[in-house]
Length: 152
Ligand SMILES: [Zn+2]
Ligand SMILES: [Zn+2]
Image 1 (tube, rainbow, N blue to C red):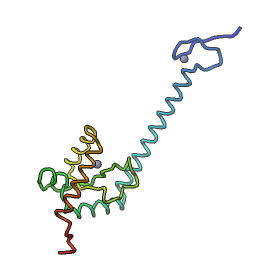
Image 2 (image 1 turned 45 degrees about the horizontal axis):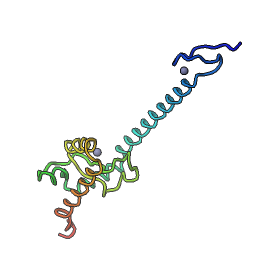
Image 3 (image 1 turned 90 degrees about the vertical axis):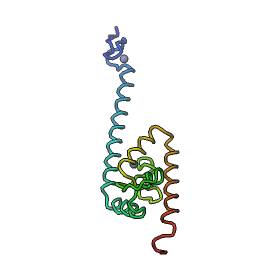
Image 4 (image 1 turned 135 degrees about the vertical axis):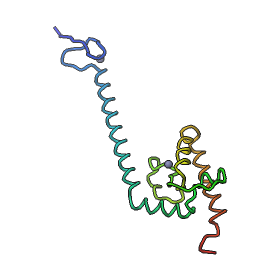
């Protein structure tokens, strides 16, 4: 006579010595979640290391200097001259690691504008926000950098 027991999870009757399919599924899903957490942790660690790297310090300093330490977003949007606090990746490094030091994709911002842009990217069409930032960079360069300090 086969001996049955109840699955502790779904309470279906299962053969003694076997595992209920619902538990197999459950364990698989749990393992997947753990791997996801691990990947997220590793990605965060990699990003944090990058933001502390010398290469990033130098690149972001160069970009801020190129735009005269001005918040390009606030300036192009409102005409206000606000000092830049940091440099933002138009394409986040989590989306394209290869662009992390690509100066054509970097825009100097104040902390306030930076928060605003990230909030807008969540609320609005992310690609439109990215495009807007690229337009501002071009605009600023054309009006204020085009003739270059070297030519003057
Ligand atoms: Zn079950
Ligand atoms: Zn950012």
